Image (cartoon, rainbow, N blue to C red):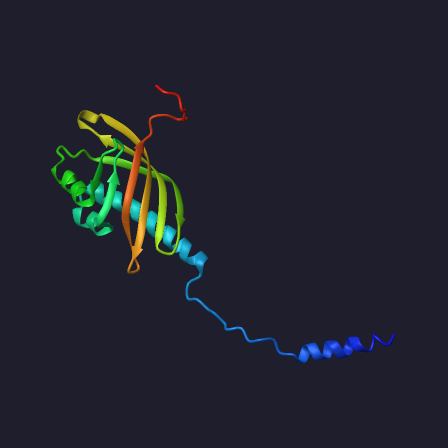
Length: 168
């Protein structure tokens, strides 16, 4: 019974004992909002890149890349941004194409982003012929000075529906 009197006293003392002050840390960036904003920005960049690519808009494509940008093509050849732009400039004939981008996947951090995408290109050849060419692509972006740039792109032509480790 004598201990029951101590309980209200302890409760009163604990209420009067201030806890150490913790510095409030606030951030202007909400990680979820930033992640969503960045994912939209870089996936839209992929679409904008192909609009520029199909139109042969060299200035627009160059603005999205850096001198360090590398493109690994479906045949395994690696080119720099400059080499790729030169190839586009000299490719004749340049067939118009229709393109569907789908199955976007995004992973990212504060200054990097990785985008996976399925790119279905249909080349409109002379005499009404069409050539369908589907690719799976991985785009790696880096943010410098608050702006996203393509650092590396690797794409593979889709030739099979399932994978096997069999030697053919």
